Image (cartoon, rainbow, N blue to C red; front, top):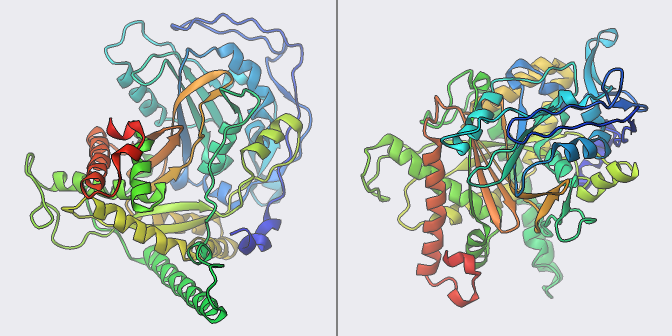
Amino acid sequence: MESLTKGLRWRKTSLKPIQITKRGLETTITNGINGGSINHDYDSVNNQYMTTSGEEQPLSPAARLFHEPNFNVYVIAIIGSKNPINPCIIYEKLPHTLLKHHRFSSLQVVDDKNGGTMKWVPTDVNLDNHIIIPTIPQTLDSPDKFLEDYVYNLSKTSIDSSKPMWDLHLLNLKTSDAEAVGIFRIHHSLGDGTSLMSLLLACTRQISNPDAVPTIPTNKNSGWFSYYSSRSGSGDPWWRRWFMMVCMGFWLVWNTLVDVAYFMATALFLKDTETPLKAPAGAEFTPRRFVYRTVSLDDMKLVKNAMNLTINDVALGVTQAGLSRYLDRRYGQKGATSTAKKNNLPRKKIRLRSTLLINLRPSSGIQALADMMEKNTEAKWGNWIGYVLLPFTIGIRDDPIDYVREAKATIDRKKHSLEALYTFSISELVLKFFGIKAASSLSHKIITHTTLCFSNLVGPLEEIGFYGHGMEFIAPSSYGQPHGLMINFQSYVNKMTIVLSVDESTIPDPHKLLDDLEDSLKLIKEAVYAKGLVKEESMPQAAFA
């Protein structure tokens, strides 16, 4: 991917850190965990953190896109803490980490003198305007429901553009999953979801080694020719290697042509089947209900190892199975047992696709971002957004393993295509010749003509702490997108958190969809055992829970 995008690097220069100083720092904090107040006096005059250097930069086309009325998207990251949150520490640490990032310390300003373009302008940062500590009732019937409603109400609001467009909500609320909860809300113009999560993780450290950043596993065999490369060098004759290279090249070109044609047809007229999962027009303006469920990552690894898959294959297979079960119930009667031949799904094949927004820019990595904040080094940042349309196979299968087999075939097919690169180029051409309104319209049509958004993010291998607060789970998602359903998988140590962001008028029972996803993983795991694909004594203990 990096070699294919070298010619695009000029579009965005490396990001330089903002230097932040504090004037007259005198801090007096009265921390009332159960609804108390917090007072700060960082500056005796205006109570602000001051930026002392930093250059203005234009917003990238992708950042400008997220300011269009029909594409005003916010990233949400719900973080569970193992211990009560100390606001004093958050106030102390943020200026030395997150605020060193240019976009978290800059306004997005319209430059009327330059044709109405937008630019990043460094500004004074008042943390009292960004850290929100709500008053929590002393007695609650359901803390989990309180948290769910809090984030739901948060999705009804936006962030004032007169300040850097992010905030952090600290809730010392004990739920069934954590002792306290922090909620980051970040406008999508600040970066793509993967980059923003990497930046947040760069602010954390390993519990066992407080000086070390988290370890994130990487896919060593990524790329379009990974399948062939993993088999090359095995002593095959030269003519066989050349023949395979020609075949793979032809496969790559053909798949790309088909995918680009499919993308153009979707932008013009090709829509997904109208199902109970497809949101009506205007869903981007409705609030979202966020629900999440943590399952065993070891169970997913068990299926992965038994069938020679990837975690992404398993996540997609579980999602296909869960969506099929959910739609079967929505279409049919309660209590009915469905099979491949007898179920409630429509006889006509359902077209159901996910829109994946892929950042083509090579990632800087967590260590580079941590060095930027700590050592004032440079780190690459910016959005080169391409689209990938991922089809889901909907149907009831008598053998649950069929779901992951179908998912693997779909992902293998997408790996051998330059769809994201060419859809990015098409979007850039539309932006260049027709402007931001046309580019926004193109993106909106692609998303409204598909059904959902799906992602799978890889998290740390070891337990980490955010400014000394041990993390229990990470649940990222977003709101403001036209889709009525967004599904995120986020791994962390030996856990996998499944996060749903739903439009309640489309999916009124998101917890049942979570049940279907969790039950699907269990059925797939049981099927792996039943077929003798794995030996019990070689499996992790969590696989038998």
